[in-house]
Length: 118
Image 1: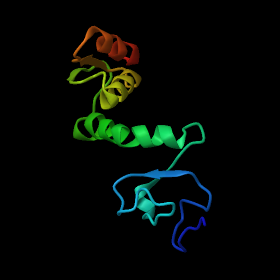
Image 2: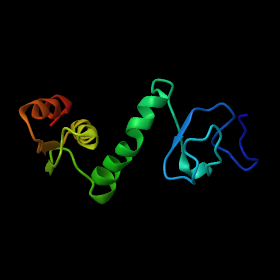
Image 3: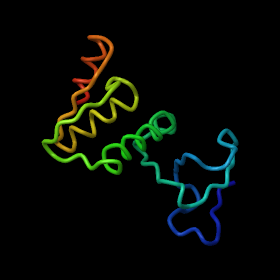
Image 4: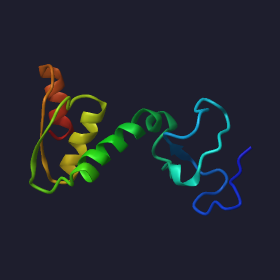
């Protein structure tokens, strides 16, 4: 059953959405989630991809855009650049035209981080 509350304005039944940090019940087939906790999920992103990356992406957002606004051509250090959060940070920094220097634990991880934009 797909429904939205009477006061919901940004979503309609059948929309693909993602959320994090809502009330208990993440593994349930149906779930009530406040509208301000939802984001539309583009068709190009699978539910599996979204589940694996959404919270990591939010973490990078608050680090690079809220905690400190990274600017073009700015140089900064990021630890664990080949991990899930780190790889998103490498790509985001590149998109911002910033220069991320990443720490990693092996040559293989260094290559992964460089490929992602470090």
